[in-house]
Length: 361
Image 1: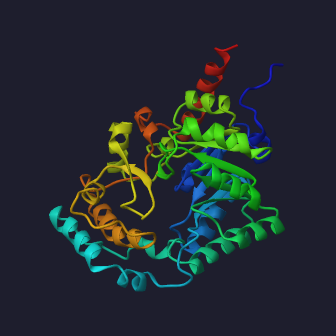
Image 2: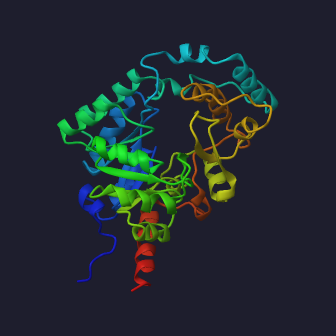
């Protein structure tokens, strides 16, 4: 029997049939991806400890232990501070500009509490509590972006937990491998969310060249089977995909945003620090456009810019204003043209990758 070209060492390490990591903030998408043969990683950075526990048990009860949790753990976040105290430290110029943008576009005030209160990037106390919940729940894989505290590597080794480190530069990959990361996500410039300045075609083979036996997972614009095939040809052991699930049938993304995603091309995205204080790729919206204007004050570092942005984002979402809303979306979004079940997306991606690779003999 001919060897399956999609059976890679990443499949062996994660104990799944396909080298596709499904990154999602929706637990229903995670379950569907796991059932379809991909490896789901649930983004929980904005969840409270109770919510993380609830979501982990929801997934485990339905697909068993083959899943991971992603947390955003900025290395330079404050040790302990309440979001309101941090917000009070924001300079007057940036506050005034934020108010100007909200008034210009008639952005309503949030209906309820701003969800950013629970973000692990606010301070190291919240981040540690999130990590401890994930460890206590015996999640087998933890993925981290924007850095990770040393104690996470120590605790992971002690408990047999595997770590995936997301990086946007080769030097970061080297550092995370030295610290003990089990897998590296080499994330290209065209990826959704926080990303570095190198293109996927450049960063993936460069990280592969220094990774040794550590599997490299390609991220950045991955939405089709051709992307998966290309990633394997670059030396990656699999792909990390996020944008492709946003408009799926199971996704809990607001239908208004889903419609924007289905209509968008890569040119409708922008890479900006205006949302979080660190560069990330999102759908263009008035907030990102205004902070690029000559009259805008300097963007603040994280978590201050994120706190400043939170009121705009939640006000826009609560009012369901399509003209104001945004979402972290990669440049591969142009291939996301119709809503379909997660299983169909996985099957289509795998089948197209096999056909593409077979065409080269």
